[in-house]
Picture 1 (cartoon, rainbow, N blue to C red):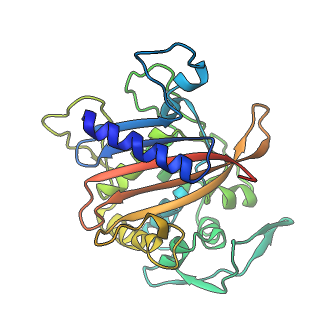
Picture 2: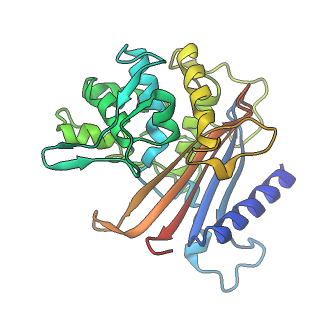
Length: 302
Protein backbone atom coordinates (compact mmCIF):
# COMPACT_ATOMS: atom_id res chain seq x y z
CA UNK A 1 0.00 0.00 0.00
CA UNK A 2 2.77 2.46 0.88
CA UNK A 3 4.60 1.79 -2.39
CA UNK A 4 1.34 2.23 -4.31
CA UNK A 5 0.63 5.50 -2.54
CA UNK A 6 4.14 6.85 -3.13
CA UNK A 7 3.89 6.02 -6.83
CA UNK A 8 0.44 7.61 -7.00
CA UNK A 9 1.60 10.83 -5.33
CA UNK A 10 4.62 11.05 -7.63
CA UNK A 11 2.42 10.65 -10.71
CA UNK A 12 0.00 13.30 -9.46
CA UNK A 13 2.81 15.75 -8.72
CA UNK A 14 4.20 15.19 -12.22
CA UNK A 15 0.77 15.73 -13.77
CA UNK A 16 0.17 18.94 -11.82
CA UNK A 17 3.54 20.29 -12.94
CA UNK A 18 3.05 19.19 -16.55
CA UNK A 19 -0.38 20.82 -16.75
CA UNK A 20 0.83 23.96 -14.95
CA UNK A 21 -2.01 23.49 -12.47
CA UNK A 22 -2.34 25.21 -9.11
CA UNK A 23 -3.37 22.00 -7.38
CA UNK A 24 -4.56 18.49 -8.03
CA UNK A 25 -6.30 15.57 -6.34
CA UNK A 26 -6.59 11.91 -7.25
CA UNK A 27 -8.19 8.76 -5.87
CA UNK A 28 -7.58 5.10 -6.80
CA UNK A 29 -10.18 2.44 -5.93
CA UNK A 30 -10.25 -1.35 -6.19
CA UNK A 31 -13.34 -1.97 -8.31
CA UNK A 32 -14.00 -5.44 -6.88
CA UNK A 33 -13.84 -4.56 -3.19
CA UNK A 34 -14.38 -0.81 -2.86
CA UNK A 35 -11.03 -0.42 -1.12
CA UNK A 36 -9.50 3.03 -1.50
CA UNK A 37 -5.97 2.10 -2.53
CA UNK A 38 -4.63 5.63 -2.62
CA UNK A 39 -5.64 9.25 -2.10
CA UNK A 40 -3.31 12.05 -3.07
CA UNK A 41 -3.23 15.83 -3.14
CA UNK A 42 -0.72 18.16 -4.73
CA UNK A 43 0.83 20.28 -3.38
CA UNK A 44 1.26 17.99 -0.40
CA UNK A 45 3.20 18.18 2.85
CA UNK A 46 5.37 16.08 5.16
CA UNK A 47 3.27 15.06 8.20
CA UNK A 48 6.49 14.48 10.15
CA UNK A 49 7.55 18.09 9.68
CA UNK A 50 4.69 20.59 9.74
CA UNK A 51 6.88 23.61 10.42
CA UNK A 52 5.99 26.35 7.99
CA UNK A 53 3.28 24.28 6.31
CA UNK A 54 0.21 26.42 5.49
CA UNK A 55 -3.15 25.06 6.63
CA UNK A 56 -4.32 25.11 3.03
CA UNK A 57 -1.78 22.41 2.16
CA UNK A 58 -2.94 20.15 5.00
CA UNK A 59 -6.49 19.91 3.72
CA UNK A 60 -7.46 16.56 2.17
CA UNK A 61 -9.01 18.01 -0.97
CA UNK A 62 -10.21 14.61 -2.18
CA UNK A 63 -12.94 14.78 0.48
CA UNK A 64 -13.30 18.47 1.35
CA UNK A 65 -13.39 20.22 -2.02
CA UNK A 66 -16.49 20.11 -4.19
CA UNK A 67 -16.76 20.93 -7.88
CA UNK A 68 -19.28 20.62 -10.66
CA UNK A 69 -18.26 17.34 -12.35
CA UNK A 70 -18.53 18.52 -15.94
CA UNK A 71 -18.46 15.95 -18.71
CA UNK A 72 -17.49 13.06 -16.43
CA UNK A 73 -21.23 12.43 -15.93
CA UNK A 74 -21.88 11.87 -19.64
CA UNK A 75 -21.46 8.06 -19.56
CA UNK A 76 -24.34 7.95 -17.07
CA UNK A 77 -26.49 10.03 -19.42
CA UNK A 78 -25.90 7.58 -22.27
CA UNK A 79 -26.61 4.63 -19.95
CA UNK A 80 -29.89 6.17 -18.83
CA UNK A 81 -31.00 6.88 -22.40
CA UNK A 82 -30.24 3.29 -23.42
CA UNK A 83 -32.07 1.88 -20.41
CA UNK A 84 -35.16 3.97 -21.12
CA UNK A 85 -35.21 3.12 -24.81
CA UNK A 86 -34.67 6.70 -25.93
CA UNK A 87 -31.88 5.50 -28.23
CA UNK A 88 -30.26 2.28 -29.35
CA UNK A 89 -26.58 1.38 -29.30
CA UNK A 90 -26.24 2.20 -33.02
CA UNK A 91 -28.31 5.41 -32.94
CA UNK A 92 -27.00 8.54 -34.63
CA UNK A 93 -27.82 11.95 -33.13
CA UNK A 94 -28.17 15.34 -34.77
CA UNK A 95 -25.53 17.41 -32.96
CA UNK A 96 -25.89 20.76 -34.69
CA UNK A 97 -25.86 23.60 -32.11
CA UNK A 98 -29.29 24.82 -30.97
CA UNK A 99 -30.85 27.25 -28.50
CA UNK A 100 -32.95 26.84 -25.39
CA UNK A 101 -34.69 30.06 -24.33
CA UNK A 102 -31.88 32.15 -25.77
CA UNK A 103 -29.06 29.95 -24.42
CA UNK A 104 -26.92 28.29 -27.09
CA UNK A 105 -26.00 24.65 -26.59
CA UNK A 106 -22.89 23.89 -28.61
CA UNK A 107 -19.73 21.80 -28.67
CA UNK A 108 -16.07 22.79 -28.83
CA UNK A 109 -16.10 21.78 -32.49
CA UNK A 110 -19.10 21.63 -34.80
CA UNK A 111 -20.45 18.17 -35.64
CA UNK A 112 -23.54 17.65 -37.76
CA UNK A 113 -24.19 14.20 -36.33
CA UNK A 114 -22.54 11.69 -34.00
CA UNK A 115 -23.07 8.10 -32.93
CA UNK A 116 -23.46 7.43 -29.21
CA UNK A 117 -19.81 6.42 -29.11
CA UNK A 118 -18.98 9.66 -30.91
CA UNK A 119 -20.98 11.65 -28.37
CA UNK A 120 -18.67 10.32 -25.64
CA UNK A 121 -15.48 10.44 -27.68
CA UNK A 122 -16.07 14.06 -28.73
CA UNK A 123 -17.75 14.94 -25.41
CA UNK A 124 -20.77 16.42 -27.14
CA UNK A 125 -22.87 18.73 -24.97
CA UNK A 126 -25.40 18.90 -27.79
CA UNK A 127 -25.71 15.12 -27.90
CA UNK A 128 -26.18 14.46 -24.19
CA UNK A 129 -28.49 17.45 -23.74
CA UNK A 130 -30.80 16.11 -26.44
CA UNK A 131 -30.84 12.75 -24.66
CA UNK A 132 -31.67 14.48 -21.38
CA UNK A 133 -34.51 16.49 -22.90
CA UNK A 134 -36.01 13.29 -24.30
CA UNK A 135 -36.38 11.91 -20.75
CA UNK A 136 -38.17 13.07 -17.59
CA UNK A 137 -36.05 15.36 -15.42
CA UNK A 138 -36.12 12.69 -12.71
CA UNK A 139 -34.28 10.20 -14.94
CA UNK A 140 -30.79 11.64 -14.57
CA UNK A 141 -31.39 12.68 -10.97
CA UNK A 142 -32.17 9.04 -10.19
CA UNK A 143 -29.22 7.59 -12.13
CA UNK A 144 -26.64 9.98 -10.71
CA UNK A 145 -27.92 9.17 -7.22
CA UNK A 146 -27.74 5.42 -7.88
CA UNK A 147 -24.06 5.82 -8.73
CA UNK A 148 -23.46 7.68 -5.46
CA UNK A 149 -23.59 11.38 -6.24
CA UNK A 150 -25.03 13.46 -3.43
CA UNK A 151 -24.21 10.74 -0.90
CA UNK A 152 -21.43 10.77 1.69
CA UNK A 153 -19.00 7.85 1.56
CA UNK A 154 -19.25 7.35 5.35
CA UNK A 155 -15.55 6.60 5.63
CA UNK A 156 -15.41 8.53 8.89
CA UNK A 157 -12.81 10.96 7.58
CA UNK A 158 -12.81 14.39 9.22
CA UNK A 159 -14.02 17.17 6.97
CA UNK A 160 -15.67 15.01 4.32
CA UNK A 161 -18.44 16.70 2.36
CA UNK A 162 -21.26 14.96 0.55
CA UNK A 163 -21.40 17.51 -2.26
CA UNK A 164 -24.45 19.45 -3.37
CA UNK A 165 -27.32 17.66 -5.04
CA UNK A 166 -30.50 19.21 -6.49
CA UNK A 167 -33.76 18.58 -4.65
CA UNK A 168 -36.00 20.62 -6.93
CA UNK A 169 -39.28 19.27 -8.26
CA UNK A 170 -39.54 21.47 -11.34
CA UNK A 171 -36.75 21.87 -13.87
CA UNK A 172 -36.45 24.29 -16.75
CA UNK A 173 -35.25 22.92 -20.08
CA UNK A 174 -31.92 24.73 -19.78
CA UNK A 175 -31.39 23.24 -16.31
CA UNK A 176 -32.12 19.76 -17.64
CA UNK A 177 -29.73 20.31 -20.53
CA UNK A 178 -26.82 21.60 -18.46
CA UNK A 179 -27.35 18.88 -15.82
CA UNK A 180 -26.49 16.36 -18.55
CA UNK A 181 -23.02 17.82 -18.93
CA UNK A 182 -22.27 18.18 -15.26
CA UNK A 183 -23.61 21.54 -14.11
CA UNK A 184 -26.12 22.07 -11.31
CA UNK A 185 -24.53 19.64 -8.84
CA UNK A 186 -21.23 19.42 -6.97
CA UNK A 187 -19.11 16.39 -6.07
CA UNK A 188 -15.84 15.55 -4.35
CA UNK A 189 -12.99 13.74 -6.13
CA UNK A 190 -13.70 10.75 -3.88
CA UNK A 191 -17.34 10.63 -4.98
CA UNK A 192 -16.24 10.80 -8.61
CA UNK A 193 -13.93 7.83 -8.07
CA UNK A 194 -16.83 5.92 -6.49
CA UNK A 195 -18.97 6.59 -9.56
CA UNK A 196 -16.31 5.10 -11.79
CA UNK A 197 -15.78 2.14 -9.45
CA UNK A 198 -19.48 1.41 -9.92
CA UNK A 199 -19.07 1.75 -13.68
CA UNK A 200 -16.04 -0.55 -13.56
CA UNK A 201 -18.02 -3.22 -11.72
CA UNK A 202 -20.65 -2.99 -14.46
CA UNK A 203 -23.32 -1.43 -12.29
CA UNK A 204 -22.60 -2.92 -8.86
CA UNK A 205 -22.41 -0.26 -6.15
CA UNK A 206 -20.08 -1.06 -3.25
CA UNK A 207 -19.35 1.03 -0.17
CA UNK A 208 -15.84 2.45 -0.08
CA UNK A 209 -13.38 1.40 2.60
CA UNK A 210 -9.98 2.67 3.73
CA UNK A 211 -9.18 -0.70 5.31
CA UNK A 212 -8.75 -4.16 3.83
CA UNK A 213 -12.06 -5.68 2.73
CA UNK A 214 -12.01 -9.42 3.41
CA UNK A 215 -14.16 -11.13 2.38
CA UNK A 216 -15.27 -8.81 -0.46
CA UNK A 217 -18.67 -7.16 -0.11
CA UNK A 218 -21.19 -8.43 -2.71
CA UNK A 219 -22.51 -4.93 -3.32
CA UNK A 220 -25.83 -3.81 -4.77
CA UNK A 221 -26.75 -3.84 -8.43
CA UNK A 222 -27.92 -0.35 -9.36
CA UNK A 223 -27.84 -0.57 -13.17
CA UNK A 224 -28.19 -3.35 -15.77
CA UNK A 225 -24.85 -5.03 -16.47
CA UNK A 226 -25.34 -5.27 -20.23
CA UNK A 227 -25.90 -1.52 -20.60
CA UNK A 228 -22.92 -0.55 -18.45
CA UNK A 229 -20.69 -2.98 -20.39
CA UNK A 230 -21.82 -1.38 -23.64
CA UNK A 231 -21.00 2.11 -22.41
CA UNK A 232 -17.62 1.06 -20.97
CA UNK A 233 -16.75 -0.20 -24.44
CA UNK A 234 -17.83 3.17 -25.89
CA UNK A 235 -15.64 4.96 -23.35
CA UNK A 236 -12.55 3.24 -24.74
CA UNK A 237 -12.84 5.56 -27.75
CA UNK A 238 -12.03 8.59 -25.58
CA UNK A 239 -8.39 7.45 -25.26
CA UNK A 240 -8.08 6.59 -28.95
CA UNK A 241 -6.98 8.99 -31.72
CA UNK A 242 -9.69 11.63 -32.13
CA UNK A 243 -10.77 11.39 -28.50
CA UNK A 244 -10.44 14.03 -25.82
CA UNK A 245 -8.35 11.75 -23.60
CA UNK A 246 -5.83 10.47 -26.13
CA UNK A 247 -2.95 11.72 -23.95
CA UNK A 248 -4.01 9.20 -21.30
CA UNK A 249 -3.59 6.25 -23.66
CA UNK A 250 -1.23 3.48 -22.57
CA UNK A 251 0.32 1.48 -25.39
CA UNK A 252 -0.85 -2.13 -25.34
CA UNK A 253 -3.32 -1.50 -22.50
CA UNK A 254 -7.05 -0.91 -22.82
CA UNK A 255 -8.56 1.85 -20.71
CA UNK A 256 -12.06 3.33 -20.59
CA UNK A 257 -12.10 6.97 -19.53
CA UNK A 258 -13.95 10.25 -19.69
CA UNK A 259 -12.46 13.69 -19.49
CA UNK A 260 -14.21 16.87 -18.47
CA UNK A 261 -13.81 20.55 -17.71
CA UNK A 262 -15.92 22.81 -15.53
CA UNK A 263 -15.75 26.39 -14.35
CA UNK A 264 -14.96 26.83 -10.68
CA UNK A 265 -17.56 28.39 -8.40
CA UNK A 266 -16.34 31.07 -6.01
CA UNK A 267 -17.39 31.63 -2.36
CA UNK A 268 -20.31 33.83 -3.45
CA UNK A 269 -21.73 31.15 -5.75
CA UNK A 270 -20.59 32.84 -8.95
CA UNK A 271 -18.19 31.44 -11.51
CA UNK A 272 -14.63 32.71 -11.27
CA UNK A 273 -11.72 32.77 -13.71
CA UNK A 274 -10.55 29.25 -12.82
CA UNK A 275 -11.29 25.83 -14.25
CA UNK A 276 -11.31 22.27 -13.01
CA UNK A 277 -10.07 19.64 -15.47
CA UNK A 278 -11.02 16.02 -14.88
CA UNK A 279 -10.02 12.57 -16.02
CA UNK A 280 -11.83 9.56 -14.61
CA UNK A 281 -11.94 5.98 -15.78
CA UNK A 282 -11.38 2.27 -15.30
CA UNK A 283 -8.67 -0.20 -16.27
CA UNK A 284 -8.17 -2.60 -17.85
CA UNK A 285 -11.24 -1.97 -19.98
CA UNK A 286 -11.60 -5.67 -20.80
CA UNK A 287 -12.25 -6.55 -17.13
CA UNK A 288 -11.81 -3.52 -14.87
CA UNK A 289 -9.85 -3.90 -11.65
CA UNK A 290 -9.16 -0.27 -10.84
CA UNK A 291 -11.09 2.99 -10.99
CA UNK A 292 -9.50 6.40 -10.69
CA UNK A 293 -10.64 9.99 -10.55
CA UNK A 294 -8.25 12.91 -10.98
CA UNK A 295 -8.85 16.64 -11.09
CA UNK A 296 -6.65 19.69 -11.57
CA UNK A 297 -7.38 23.31 -10.79
CA UNK A 298 -5.94 26.01 -12.99
CA UNK A 299 -6.56 29.62 -13.97
CA UNK A 300 -8.26 30.26 -17.29
CA UNK A 301 -5.06 31.65 -18.74
CA UNK A 302 -2.85 28.86 -17.36
